[in-house]
Length: 352
Figure 1: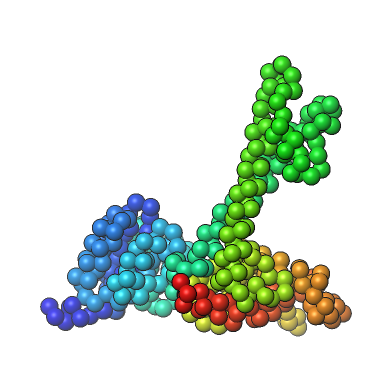
Figure 2: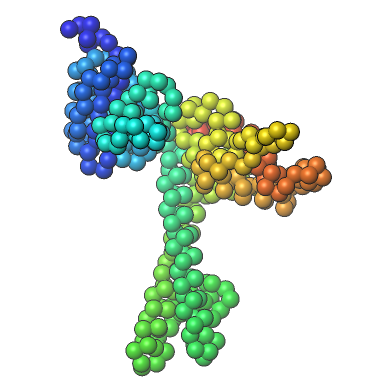
């Protein structure tokens, strides 16, 4: 009995909104059992206690540590269990074994045992997570705001000339304010409906604009405090700094090197050589928001930074395409910002 309790066991979990399915295997891959628990603190405690009944629980593989599995990941980490983020199960394995929650949980456990396709999950309790939360809200606000003004202007474009000439303004804010003050366009059902719709869309745009100002103010204050080194670099603003730090996470020690951050941002060069042709191609993977942030920094530097302009001219003379130059610039920016991101996050952790 004592030897059973001292042997190491590995927990794999397939997470869902309402329930989690756990599977336990031993250090040689033998399946020991599976259990379904509710996705709450009581279920987390039950799952951990059940897994420890088979032996010494030191490692756990969880799918979705940033979404459905976030609560369980925090609980197990507090219980001194090494939690690893599991990538999506291999499709070839699914073709042979089928798809079910227990098989996905077992696959997660075996992934931890093999040491492949798993990573340390991001901590979600510091300045980087706060930046991520604001950035998520800001993206949705910007998207909704753009959709709203496009809808409002679409209605004005198709409206009669007298209405369009009265309400159309080239400046979006002036157009929205003019439509928000609108009272009546006539007594017909069509006129009343158009007036009401224009007024509602205009008020929505104005509200979203104020919301965007509040989010930008919060992001400005947060990055000024927790991203001082990154913000000082040419072309880096509050939004781009927040995105890059949030991608790195509050525990950046999980990023082994600058190349790991480059891969995470999708700017690491990928081999595309064949025969006598030796070249690299763009990486379409990685975090696309971080990739876009690096692209924005590169574009600002290409327009305004003399050092970058000299580099672009030299690479163009060598026959590089614009996309290849962008890829190189984004990779160099990661190399420049990587130590600054680590330093900023370390300072933020000490002051939090």
